[in-house]
Amino acid sequence: MTDAIREKCKLLRLAYVADMYEKVPFENPEQYLIDLLQQEIELREIAKGERLIKKAKFMNEKELDDYRWGEHIHFPTNLDRDGLESLSFIKRKENVILSGAPGTGKSHLATALGRKACRNGYEVRFYRVADLIDLLEKSWAEGRYQLLRNRFNKVDMIILDEMGYVPFSKDGAELLFQLISDWYEQKSLIITSNLEFSQWNKIFVDARLTAALVDRVIHHAHILSFTGDSYRVKHALSNR
Image (cartoon, rainbow, N blue to C red; front, side):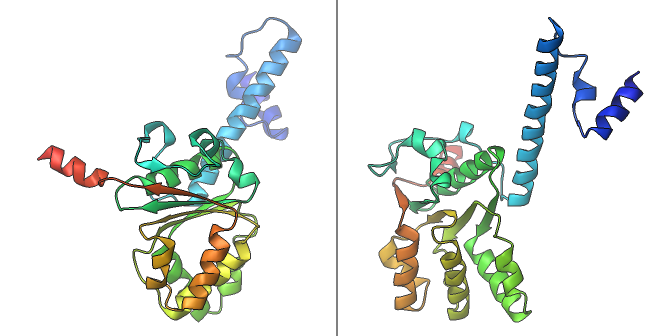
């Protein structure tokens, strides 16, 4: 009987019913069928979220459940923790900028928000900015830059981690600017940076390009500032 059920489920593309039908409590036919199909829907959503997480290429498995919220995070007046965790800014195609000293939890928070977005069905991509610049320059040199741009057509949110840690070449900065111009008011960005906007000219060699880029990034943006000492330094000192 189980093989026959599995075959019918396969024909109907029901991936989980054959594994769950014996585990769902039975009170009446309608209740049983509804609960069984609900299990199929929920397990499909979980599997989809995990596929999206894999496609996003996060650097680690940081989650919101183990994030240390504290007074070192300063929210803007139009956003609080609940609003941030709701991910409503993605629907509105708004940006989130996490700015502050290294080691204060910016990358952890960006990754955790991205992973939750994947589980909510959003297409997300994660890049360290230096790695993205290398990819852009390589694709340009090989004549594949337009193909790379097209990869983001169906993406809802892009996370750009560590903006400002490594200065760019002029070509790399221009290619990144072109991408961010493509995404302007079309997608959400989460950007982590150890530099204030007034210091971005240290990494973008052209002052006019820097001004234009900052203008696009901060329009429709929520800016969170991070203060305090590095968690990594405090952890190392406590171990000593």
